[in-house]
Amino acid sequence: MTSSYTQSTDIPLQRRQFIRILGGGAVSTIAAATAATAGLSACSQGMPSEAIEAWRGPDATVVNNPDVRHWLLSYAILAPHSHNLQSWVADLATPNQITLYCDLKRLLPQTDPLSRQIMMSHGTFLELLDMAARERGLRAETTLFPQGVFGPTTLDARPVATVRLTPDATVQKDALFAHILQRHTNRSAYDIGRAIPATAWSALAAAAQPVAPMRVGYVGLDNAVALAEHRRIAREAWRIELTVPRTIMESFDVLRVGASEIAAHRDGLSLTSPMVVAMERLGLFDRTRAPAPDDYATTSQIKDFDAKLASTPGFLWMVTPGNDRATQINAGRAYVRLQLAATGQGLAMQPLSQALQEYAEQKQPYADIHALVGAKTTGDTVQMWARVGYAPMVEPAPRRRLKDFIRA
Image (cartoon, rainbow, N blue to C red; front, side):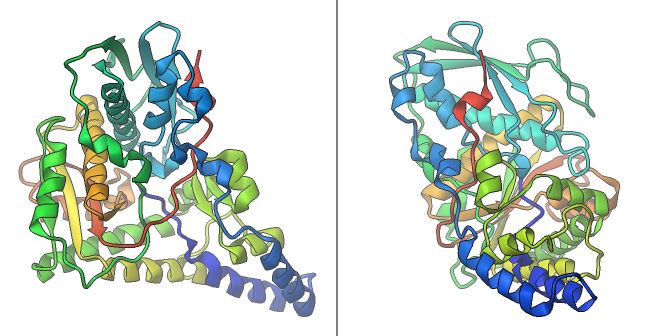
């Protein structure tokens, strides 16, 4: 559930600017430099506040709404989602019930061709919905695929789940609920000098267990050989996704550059760097074609990611004995619990989804990570793999308005 694009484009885009200028573009060197400098002062240097307002918690209109389902959904929409697509549709037509659908226009056919990650992203939503219901003394009785299970390769217009809400004084609140508003995916460098204690690893593994049978594994600084192999596989999988034109273009399609684009869409992958925004305004950031493998825009991103991997003191993975649609949903539920537990432990996490994706070019990294964590010989499936460590807090990802998710 991670993006395939980072803010490391600042330097390559600056260099591409000068390359295009020197190549005889219509804008002179002096004029372009002046425009870029002026653009930097005017361009966004942060996330627009309206795009992350959901992370402040339910507002007064939601708190005072007599329909508690709006309050529950205000937390559910903060769940992690692949490429931050937010493909959840909540139908409220039946009283005391939420019927969850998938927005079929918000899929990832290139990097997630079997929609396994999309199903996991619906599992994360259902888990936060369940936690929110418990917080309000409600039992959330979830029925998966009430009109039939999706096929193994495609999704359709049938519901993903129905959630029946019933008051129940015996329902126990979930302690992980307290971390929902602070849970953010962190793609920055981590503190390589700070080992993750065994107690923290155990807390993360324990958090996943209430959902469904699955194996949670981890490796830390005490196993340098294994760490090096995790880094190698992650590095190669990242390189592949950056250099296969159709997969990088899938990220470009949901890339939001600058405050105005982010505020308009409130989804996808966000870039707020002033240099990137300035280059965009100058027409020097071409999102209509994939950069070549040897372009500085590509090689610098690989170098940047390599540095982040080198800073990572630990890796965590989740393995399931099956891979049907219900298992994928439950894997998503378990993952968000893991990440909430990590938040409670002061840990940062970033999914490393590339090597787990089922498109042809990732065949070798897919096999390598399954072999490394002992899933290949048993025929099990690695549902999630993530880097873990200590890092400063980062801004949350944008979220669309609550009303955008509701089908009345």
